[in-house]
Length: 293
Image (cartoon, rainbow, N blue to C red; front, side):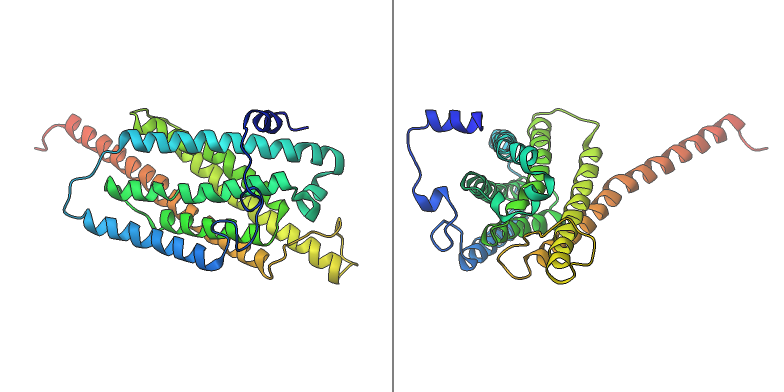
């Protein structure tokens, strides 16, 4: 049962051609290595090109456009997460969590379509960077690297037919619901105290994702090559050789960069605040002592 998906199908009259409703390598848009590389290279060229052009120009505000972009991604992530859960929760209930993560049967036509939408979201999210450089906001390596590599990783997961990637995707969508709402609200002038905790949740997300990759890889190789080792059963690691290794390295790099961002942004700010308070207290004590005779 998928009530929301059924409702949408019942009220949307047009139907997509097969290469848009399911992933067909070489026919679906952005489904070849060449097209993906060209798109991401274009993204980098546009980003740094605009940054160079904006060097001696006044920043654009883009408030309305940026807020619209963020609310679309927040609501879109929420809808996509609900649709994925409609597919996955009954499967977990009927077959268990291991089957739901590890079986190649998990990748139903509906789930594959949702993965495609999530993949295209990654290209829409590239506007985050364009907006930053047009508004002359600081552009971090983490931001550009994360957007570029995530799009490539989503492409690889579709090529490898990795149904179990719904677990990492769902975590990411849940975070994006809150994150893009945060950007939407703060661009309008709102202020929140919980930004650092959102970064903490992102770090936890990568730890969970790394565990899932290690778990799936162990299950597969234990079942295939070392059946004497304790394991629950086989785990499908994809039709693309080395996809699990690539995922592990990407997630490890994300974890390192996000931890560094957390330290640079929040820990150093806390230390500066602590030093400022200590200096203020010392100054007050000096004033209360009066002049030295």
